[in-house]
Amino acid sequence: MTPLPLRTSLTLAYTGLLAVIVTAVAFGYHRLLVRQVDLDATAGVEELVRGLHGYLQFRNGQPAFVFDQRDADAAAFIGEATHYYQVYDLATGKLLAQSASFALAGVDYTPVEVFSFREPPAIHDVQTDRGRLRISSSVVTGADGHEFLLQVGLALDRTDRSIASLERLLLWGIVAGLLLSALVGRWMAGRALAPLSRLAEATRPIDIDTLSRRLPVRGAGDELDEVTHAFNLALDRVERAVGDMRQFSAALAHELRTPLSILRGETELALRQGPATDGERQRLENQLEEFDRLNALITQILTLARAEAGQIALARTSVDLAAVTTATVEQIEPVADVQGIALSCTASPAVVVTGDAGWLERLLLILLDNAIKFTPRGGQVHVELSADQGIAHLSVTDTGIGIPEDALARVFEPFFRGDPARSRATEGSGVGLALARWVAIQHHGTIEVASRSGHGSRFTLSLPTA
Image (cartoon, rainbow, N blue to C red):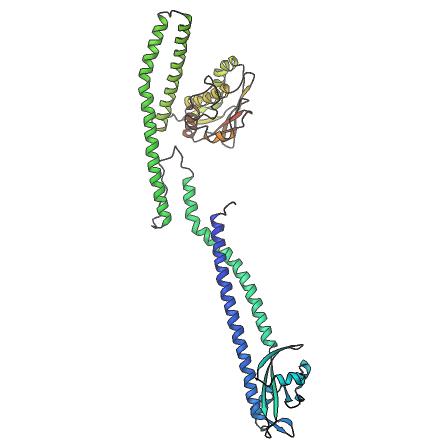
């Protein structure tokens, strides 16, 4: 499973935690509110029952509410309390009196049900066509000791509508709040990760040629500064290690030149003195070729080491890149003819860059040497020079054996060889492309490669025009 981006993970974690908290708070608030409303409704109906008990009297077995007609408060209370009420005879279960609202609600009990309300007196809810009613059943004893059942109801339809509206409001409020919190959380996560993004952006340009760069420390003293400081310390160690390796390579190459020259001299002397057999002459000539190859390799290693150490100064003059390209191709054309390779060139005129003509020529020679070396007889090598929007593009395309895809990213590394199966005769030193890359960088340009194994290669040098 592919891990989610850090910003998305933080947003989801923040939104999920907030969703749990908000849902828990909303659920708790809803429960408390419903409970409190329920208690208030129960208290309200009980208050109506207690009040009616004081006004209810029975005359000839019929209920009547006796109060001072001049008392407006009492009249208002009786009108409110008797909106939903009914009275039953507990001896027979007969309905004696009922309000119009109770009758319209369709609440009517059989004698058996009436008798069941006697013990104990209770409060219960009834769902009717006019909404939910909370009914309180209580026993009232008349003056003659006769018992009656008084039922007083309180309509809960308004309360139920209010609770339903609250539930809808909570639901939509939670959804809207979570969407808003997700957007805000993503923005906050972006703000929190912005220093890390800037740190990554500052890290990208650092490579083997720019190990002296260091990441900026914000000075906040937080975890990000600790990471930056640790990374800078790692860069220090890598820079020292690379410097030591370059110094070792240069020193080793320099020390090898003297014994190599001595051995070559002795071999030449033995060859001049005349070997005893043709086999010995052939061996001596092969040794001379190997000495020359090693000497060329040592020279390239020394050149690359001096270049990476900043000991080579390049000229900064106007260079007619078209003329350099044409002359170099003409110079290498006889070598291509001997190898049976068709070498062609297409160069746009008046392509001028600023740099060192000698090193640019050397870069092109390296590319042409590689193209010819790894292109079989009968193949083609084409050099093309063009300019577009202030950038000069010099490409060398061949129809050779190509480069494996997994080796493309490392072809410009020193001493890297992508195909061990290549023969020693066609195998290079592994330094030329690294030197070509250094030349391109020194001219503020880039060099790229596109290739597929068995389908040839294309090296492209891009330089800013003068």
